[in-house]
Amino acid sequence: MKPISAKHKPAFWEALLFFICIIIFISYFIIGLETTPHIPILIGMLILICYGLFKKINYASLQDAMSTGASSGMGAIFLFFIIGVLISSWMISGTIPTLINTGFSLIGTTWFYAVVFAVTAIIGISMGSSLTTTATIGVAFIGMAEAMDASLAITAGAIVSGAFFGDKMSPLSDTTNLASSIIGVDLFDHIKHISLTTIPAFIISFIVFAILSPKQGTSISNVEAYREALINSGLMHWTSWIPLIILIVCTVFRMSAFLALSLSSLIAVILGKITNGFTWKEITSAWFNGFTGTTNFEPVNELLTRGGINGMLFTISLVILALSFGGLLFVTGIIPSLLNSFQEKLQRARSIIVSTAGTAIGVNVLIGEQYLSILLTGETFKPIYEKAGLTKRSLSRTLEDAGTVINPLVPWSVCGVFIADVLGVPVLTYLPFAFFCLLSPIITILFGAKTAKK
Image 1 (cartoon, rainbow, N blue to C red):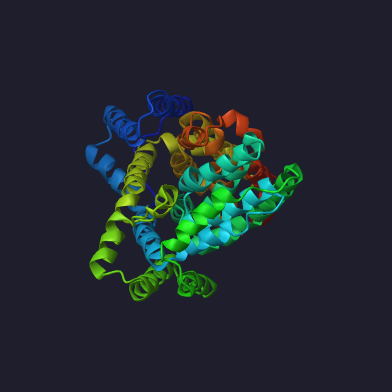
Image 2 (image 1 turned 45 degrees about the vertical axis):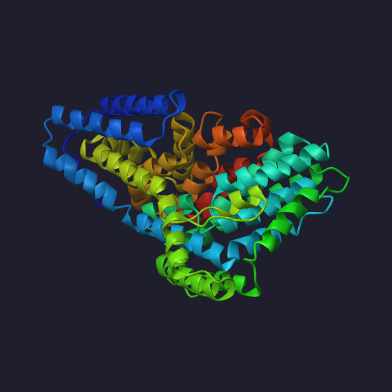
């Protein structure tokens, strides 16, 4: 966010009290009334405007702060638009179906929980959505666990762990793009940097899931139904790997994320037109409205029906409102007052990272919204990291390690409520076995300081 001058200097206690009240207000709407976060944030903005006017801040300054806050997220918003296009394009070219089919081909070993974790992670990376992965592949794995009398709690923990590993590491993920864009870090640099904590958490989790896995082999009848439907869709060809290879090459040569995703999308639709016979009318319709699966197996249709610019508008509108909300918190002096207090106490890298992680976790627990845990924590700690000489990448990594992956562990959060409903396993039941989600903030707190200095 560009610097926003505070037009009022409230006392620390006043700023803290007002901030806590607004957080409680938003929490009540999201958790208690189960509304979408847009509504309480918009009402919160109106409350902040009234507070600013009461403190004799002219409306022009308040409006400018909202605009400045929203404009800081334009990089993320443009990426969200192109991600919607990319997902549809990778469906048209068969890239995502091919990746899903490859993940399913790994099923069939005796390491059931470990393989569920790994396959869910692969599919999560290819889809860029933890909730979509959980609601589709996750449901299939829960059914398999029931059939073989495996632990539903551990299976759900493996599904959630894999889905959120994929969410963190995928260039298609909205939270990954949001964390990097808000802090001003290149997307692929961000993914490379979070691998320092994410890969160790993945390895440890895989080993634990392998140890806990039942001895008997896995029933693969459900998996074969998915694979057969994917093959019969006619979308998959050897050329389906090319868009992914293009994206990897662009990453190696450090091309900007927007250009890399755009090039991969263009190559994908050209291949889809050649190999799968899509018309330009169908392609452009999929770019906006998303791709629609048309197989004879409904669970696979749910997997394939996604993408498009229209599908990203929920996230885009939330980002705009949340950043405008953040701008008002700055111009009214609430965040600057809290920051001044933090800056006096936070000097060492370890204490700053611990405080960042604690704040991201706290926002998840209080509000139950992972986007706000990234946005509010990021905007609050960005100047603290700059003053302490810590890298932006360490901040964006901590936001993911303690913001994105904690949300499914909160029973009243957006992710927690959704996952418990679709898997039929309560959050507190699978929480002890969501090893990856539990390990990520611990690893970033223990070792994050070593790679945080510029």
